[in-house]
Length: 257
Image: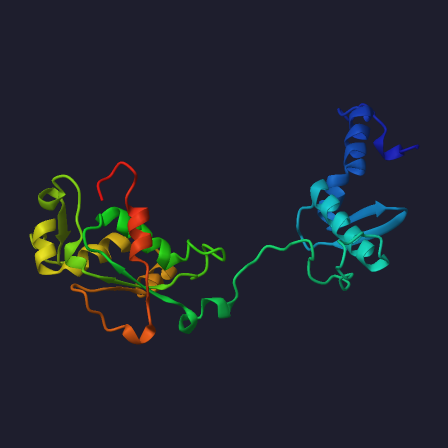
């Protein structure tokens, strides 16, 4: 085409060929046009479909994914998808029949429906016992476990004063506490001293360190009930005794029972 305003003369130091190439590059650049206009057009089976986006940068992967979703929806509508035997055709843009992954609902985490279990901590190792208690609290022992939902049970621990540790931890393991705003107020206490004073706190601190450090972890910790002695005030909940199962999982084949 004849462009008189682009003629190169003595007053212009830019050659005609470079200006033509620059304008041609901007004229045929598809990604630039798609980004400015905000519209992606995809042709499939001879039919033009367009999807509008408001200021979102569109890539070729987005266009392919959009086209695939629409083609699946059309296949459902026209009945061209072969469904498994005994399964009816889904409604248009209805639930995904091929995704059978279970996800808990609100009624599945209802505290009034949760079972109660009781564990006798006498002569059990503190660390191995705490890992199992944390598993029961989170619900990791059930098939419906989901890390983002409270699927656990209520756990009652009795005889907390009889829990044991290995090696020299009776004297070497220290528990520290302090009061904020008071310099020099930190206090140290050995495992044996804390066990004689508040035995429940030993199991509570061990289990709490194994729970998530968020709101769900604080909720799960309220489901742990630790008591010294063989009595507990939760007989009305009819807790199931799982001490035998816990002992089998606490001890390995090389440990003395």
